Image 1: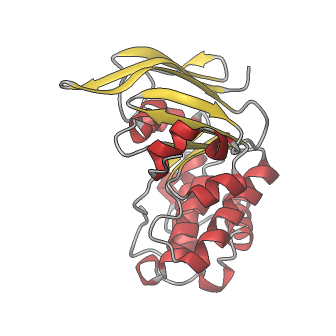
Image 2: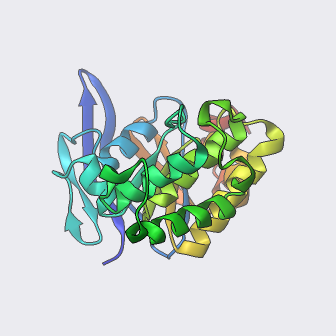
Length: 251
């Protein structure tokens, strides 16, 4: 079974109940774009941390393509095809764009001992890097140092590195956070297009409801650690309680 599943995930921090028996599925269709929404404190980031292994559940399981991965480390899950991109961009700041992408691809291939130079055996790695540079429109800045990039390009590089790990499932925490309004659409367009092209299921935490409405195949709404509801993006218009929770709209 090709699917990422949260099964009855329960997590508390002291007296705070972060996730309360959450059961959800991702990847019902290849290239599915799922958006997780909810007010602050709803449990969105905790759920993603449980799925990716950064947190251990108090109860419940994480199942990846039919296999229980609850006890696997984050690195093991990456090599199983479950990749995470954070809200705060994490780059190798003193390395070039090309070197950052090469690091991700080599990591996927477990060849990280050869970061400085590539032998003839690594031609395929370099071809993959070239493909990522082209697909994410980073060719012109390939030799620029990461710390000198404008924020939009930094976001694209971060996402490109995630795709360089060859995910089946890519979990994104507010990929447009801090990006200018003019760049937001390009960033999310690129994520959507590459995800669909490669059949990667993307699971995105997002607070911009315009983006969710336009790009989501399915929306999962959380509130107080529970699934408030899930369905098509039209639920953002039809579910009045959800509109009140997310937007403060009283109707």
